[in-house]
Amino acid sequence: RLLPVGDLGPSSIPKRPLIPNPKSLGLLRNHTSLVSEFPQILHMMASSLLKCVLLAAASAAAAAQSPAVVIPLDKQYVPVLKDDRIVSYKTAYFGTIFMGSPQPQNFTVVFDTGSGHFFLPSTSCKSDTCKRHKRYDSRISASAVDIDHRGQKIAADASQRDQVAISFGTGEVTGEFIDETVCLTEHSGLTSSTEGLPQDCTRVRVVMATEMTQEPFSTFHFDGVMGLGLETLAVDPGFSVFEQLVARKRQNFAPSFGYFLSDNDDVPSEISFGGHDPRRMASEMQWVPAQKPELGFWQVKVLSISVGSEQLPLCADGSCVAVADTGTSLLGVPRQAAQRLHWLLARKVPENPSEIDCRDFPGPDLVFELEGGVRLTLGAKEYSRPTAMKVEQSQTKKSQVVCRASLLPVDSSQALGLKSFILGEPMLRKYYTAYDWQQRKVGFALAKQPAVATDAAQALQTEVPRQHHVIGAPPVAPQAPSVIHV
Image (cartoon, rainbow, N blue to C red; front, side, top):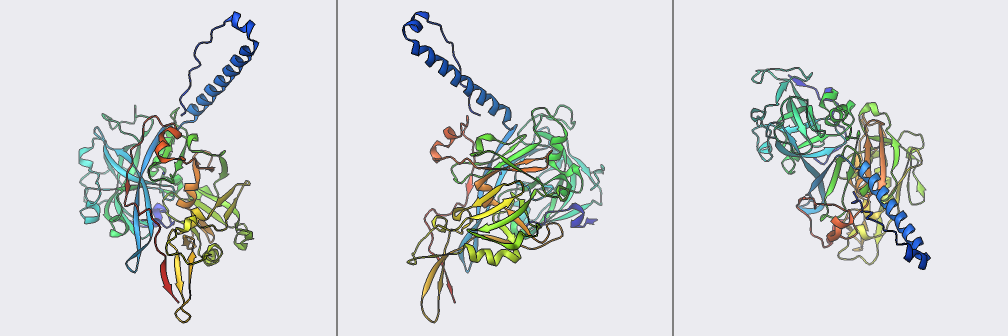
């Protein structure tokens, strides 16, 4: 039987389709004759000792705050075409997880804070779309248990299975249910028992896709989606991967995760589990309580929004919210405010250049005032479409090059309300975000981006360079403006 989408509370958000080495203090020898002859040496030694102690303390504090697991993310660019011309790119960030035992099967997934379930394509899915991806095979896993939507065990060869249909923006996934061992890092020789599982592993209910629509899944390289919305976004906490990890209450696994988006393709983006990563922060973390966490979204209250010196009246009644969504490429704005925001953020470019990257052309700041006095500011670099638009008047033959914002209109819905913003990739690249599962709050800090790509490992004090892949990267050179005739 096919369960209605609403039963699983899928995301209504539009989707496209994440330690300093302690320095040795060494041995300090007491040379009394030298000290008596050169009193300044005593001061220098004391100062050096104090600096070393402070460095060691800072390193120890950083180590104590370090997350349990850090997963580097691959990046894929997917071109968006208009009149057979590339006008923009959708992007996806995904990392590798492991499922099954005793030999785990590895899959790439989008870590999505805007949805609540974990799905992977199954070998039962025979469509070309599914075959483009790695498919999970329950027959070679000793820990796989076939279940119904309530989590009750059923026969693997049952003639009738519960199914669910989940919408993901322009596409849909239909699947059955299985209970399985999932790990964030690779571990061999695991058993079906929950006893003795490593801290980054847990038992969880998974949606095994038997059907996947061609759009958007045929164009993306990742295999599935791991929902990281709050557990109330799932039909049952048993479907929430992070809820199950937190429920194990492992000592070195904090109930939070952090998300870092790199602004340079030579440096991998990352998601950390079991704590956020202070190495990725260029400012102090500011926390904002989740608004109505029972809805399952990582949403925060927006007190006001302004462009330059103009404050929009949209949020004056206190009903605006913003959802931190790692599964959305763009900045989402309420549809009723989209036209006004586009107008305020558009800029005329003098002298009509033949090539320009609008991210480098100045514009007004877009400022979000959140609860608790937290201000999030996006500049033209973050909100602009790279490609300009050239408007040509048919009658006068005059033309004007214009830089525009890249905004996603968000329709009102029962889940999100009338005035919902989506803090997608533009905001998540500028700000490192942390998600506190226990306290139900979202943290924002300016992201610490490496100054020079070739020095990234040294700048971030990464012991081992993290492997990642970039797929379909666009040309570096700025494009000619797209032409619109009016």
